[in-house]
Length: 277
Image (tube, rainbow, N blue to C red; front, side, top):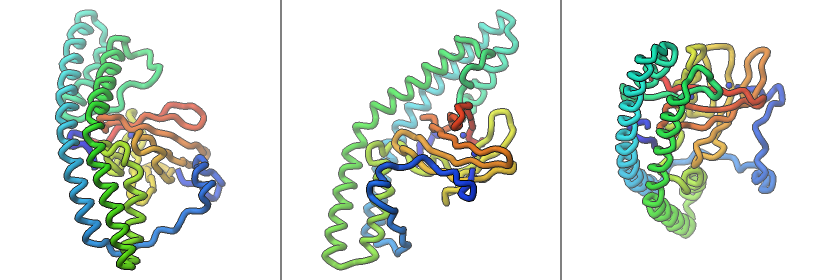
């Protein structure tokens, strides 16, 4: 699930590069293998009902995001006029690029940390925009909690039904469903894998990353790897990154509006990606 207004490095097991250790996993022992089983119709119906309820809340939040995005565009337009009057061509180009991205109903990651070419006034507009999105999102989360609670209760009811019926397929399917649901239960408004899947571009045009449903990341340059959520509710994910001559891990956060990935590599270098338009 993702907001309708949508709301950006990698595989080295043979080099012994591992993702951060999951302490809880260490305590619980090895992962239970996932078994593919037919999905019981009762579980499918329950999930569809839950997703429909969440989608209505997401649409409402998306509309609020869109309205705030329109204000951001207007603020950038006003700033363009000021910069033009001051003859600040370099800053004007940056603001116009940002404005045009959002005016087209899309967006980007924002501005690189420490970029001295970005005037303070532009950074403040972006900070205010992101802060307001966070407020809108936080205000919407309480309405989603009863929806998530109801679905959790429904999963419990199905478990009792499947156990009583000795329904092996149902129990195994429910195990996977609960694992997936656990990642978004505290914040169902923020969607699932759809918020990251697909193509992302480096803002300088050098490189395309494609996040795939099987957990792989593939690029148009000599690099590939794996991705996984660190905290789905907080929109953070981890990539183990490999390319010839370079080995590094990257932790990303997905922007609330869904158009950018802002991250840092294990050596502290900033990494930015924009969703492909």
